[in-house]
Image (cartoon, rainbow, N blue to C red; front, top):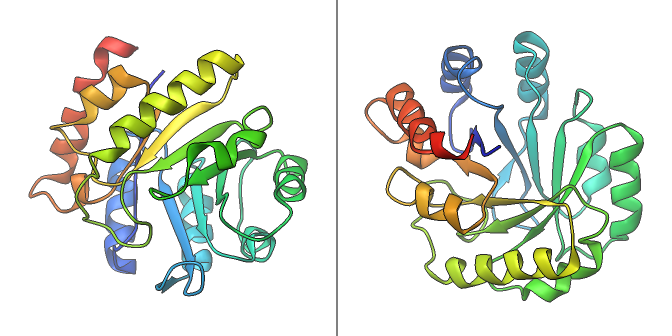
Length: 219
């Protein structure tokens, strides 16, 4: 089943507190971004606020750790069983150990590939992660335009999954909206992180429903 996770990146605290209760019963969860100002040139650590939202509204999040010290930020989060935790293949840490730490807490592990990183650099983890996330924009800022080169990269990832008989889901994050979600779904994307495509629109709830309607043929 295809899934949509509204991304809270760029929303102020008061906006998150307003939007989450309105959407929590209408989506598969929320995409939560943590940034350290080192791995990406932006610092946004809403761990405390995210923890409060998760506990209050009982959703299972998809966390995207745009950080160098994955274990530190992972340990700061309150994560229900089944939460998806994505970290970047570009970091200089023991990735197998990180995957082990995530799964020990009964969470699902995901590996992220930046737009300029060759797909094969993450391939050694394809057999042990639950999801591979392709960034279709440069990580760190909401509202960017979709990079067209992401389509070829998606095709390559789909081919590698098929050839290797891997079971991971494919996620995509960046520049996704009502004009391209259907094509991406047909090409093989399973999980969609959508920020500006929802929250920068005049009717975010209406757009969220439209996105799900577009994906009805895949249910």
